[in-house]
Image (tube, rainbow, N blue to C red; front, side, top):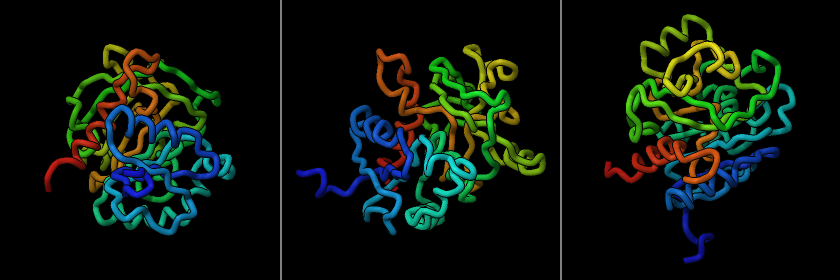
Length: 242
């Protein structure tokens, strides 16, 4: 059947300046064998059979004002908010994480890296803090994953009261660590508070992370394939009878 006649399971959003949208779609389609379609930011609605929304990395609107600050006003984001409010899973990486925070779908904000430099590291490690659906069912708590990072504004910040609430609610899903799982120091590439690399909302259906799982989706390539732990978990969640 022609792909254009098949409604996708995953809707991969495209903003002006997105540059990991096709990588994310490739990881979903080629590595996981799932359906995915690129959805332009001016679309007023998501495809009818959308089961999950993916917001890719890149530089939406050239990162003018603040990263993600303009993308939050794109027409498609109203549809994403409705989708999330209805319990649909929404997942953002890097710039997608920034857009989700700017849109109020996730707590906190992403600021310039502590060293004011651009970080690019294929050997970045993260530790799973809370395993389980919909985003980390293929992981185990305490597992160390190697997932590349590449960002200039990845320093996650949140006020102390909200941070305590997130800790208590199990909203912190990933922390930067070294290969042994130890957090702190040089293992944190951007100065994020509490070494946070990925979080979810209170309802548990929206997640954002700075590392790029779509660049860790093929065995034998420098990025490895640990990113499939995340993307595959989401696919498992969608395929589970409910």
